[in-house]
Amino acid sequence: MDETVAEFIKRTILKIPMNELTTILKAWDFLSENQLQTVNFRQRKESVVQHLIRLCEEKRASLNDAALLDIVYTQFHQHQKVWDVFQMSKGPGEDVDLFDMKQFKNAFKKILQRALKNVTVSFRETEENAIWIRIAWGTQYTKPNQYKPTYVVYYSQTPYAFKSSSTLRRNTPLLGQALTIASKHHQIVKMDLRSRYLDSLKAIVFKQYNQTFETHNSTTPLQERSLGLDINMDSRIIHENKVEKERVQRITQETFGDYSQPQLEFAQYKLETKFKSDLNGSILAEREEPLRCLIKFSSPHLLEALKSLAPAGKCQTKEY
Amino acid sequence: MEQANPLRPDGESKGGVLAHLERLETQVSRSRKQSEELQSVQAQEGALGTKIHKLRHLRDELRAAVRHRRGSVKARIANVEPNRTVEVNEQEALEEKLENVKAVLQAYHFTGLSGKLTSRGVCVCINTAFEGNLLASYFVDLVIQKPFRIHHHSVPVFIPLEEIAAKYLQTNIQHFLFSLCEYLNAYSGRKYQADRLQSDFAALLTGPLQRNPLCNLLSFTYKLDPGGQSFPFCARLLYKDLTATLPTDVTVTCQGEEALSTSWEEQRASHETLFCTKPLHQVFASFARREKLDGSGLLIDCFHCTGNTSEK
Image (cartoon, rainbow over all chains, first blue to last red; front, side, top):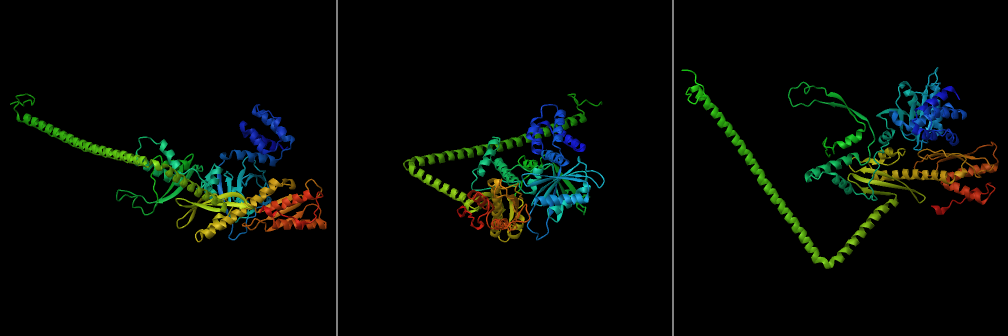
């Protein structure tokens, strides 16, 4: 086993917290059950790591195996990366998408390897039709840097791919090109959406955030839900306020739904507006050009925070 | 004369008296203001007091009315006592009717396309099926407002929902729904075939089944006699028509020898035809049956394979 590979595996295993170690090693599926059983996981971490490295050497782990371990680690720690969303598009009147996994992998790898001689590309498929791609970048003259890889999660037969944001931005156009051509699309565009939570990005982009639907089979009528509201209310709240509270609750529920919101941490809007003032002749009010502002909302869980504003009485609700 | 101290009781100096008068005046006006304020406060109190009396009176009246109403209802029930059983029967009959209607509404699911009115429009439920097996259900919540739009849905992202909506949603909702039904039923059918192949006929496969999300490209290798000496076949099924459950292009090749004997060539060609005309799992069911019937594993007569028509 190459020294660099051994070092790479060692550093990856050292990152894994002890309580996750067996789960991740099992998911990696490189060391056999028998081999794993010979390891005493209750020792100090250094000893465990050394034992594992010896087992990897016995099995002659390659760079690809090490890269797969890195992918598994990242899959378990998705929230440590910030993910961007890219959308691809086909030309009009394109043929039906007959996605062939082997073809895609070969094409993707070939495009990158033709452009940059030194690049490590690894793939791992997951159950939800997602392909995790790990790319370690080198240049014409330097070996790939295994410690600053880029990850792409591509959902085949959809136009969407998620990419971990990295500091090496000069490779992004090439990556976009490889992805577009290999998946038989024409164009790729970066969307204005970014988050640490891949699941939330998926929910927003695939429009899967609200999966409750009204059917004749549903046994919980809407009245039951509002009864729950009554129980929690202060006994001093009388009729008029109750009506208002129920109205606010209904509008909130219609707007946001009953499900848990996707997790976004910030939202930014550009706003062009004119200045409104009670005082006549104020300089700002007379200004011809609108004021250009940038409004940023941030919160650990932005959509839930917005959802709780109206019921908490902090903003008005209007039906339209 | 010296300036008299205004506080001296016998200070007759004018400055002192006038100042004193001034003070007295301000005192009077102050006390007048206070008494005016007091009066207005008292007036307000009085007004509120009368209002409270009025509201209390109103409340008592309403309470009395409620009591009276309750009393009269009880009296009516008491009078109607002997007819109670009739009423109960009526109620039971109504409940039974209600249950029936609910059951009918639920049974609409078996038609494949059903819906429920919502406050915004309608929530359509598409229940897919293949060969008499009820498969997955998908929902589309539509807003009935010009322009029509989809509020939210549970259609998988690789089904071209936006394309279908762009073509038909605004002009012909029926066409939109039927077209969507077609796509979803076909997808469910293809997925069912691929799942059945993987689960029921894994013994005949010599490698993993390659598939994609839409299940419109399947690639696998199989042997008619697992564990036997024959060469495996490689099949590649393309479903270019997303509204169909049978492939549009089938290629079967034989790994191994270049020079194929005529019997293998016949077999290969017949397999291609089979895959084109019958659902995947049925083809493999016929392979499995043939293997059972004739242990040698050699093809005897390919055109007599009987896909079980009773399964339809």
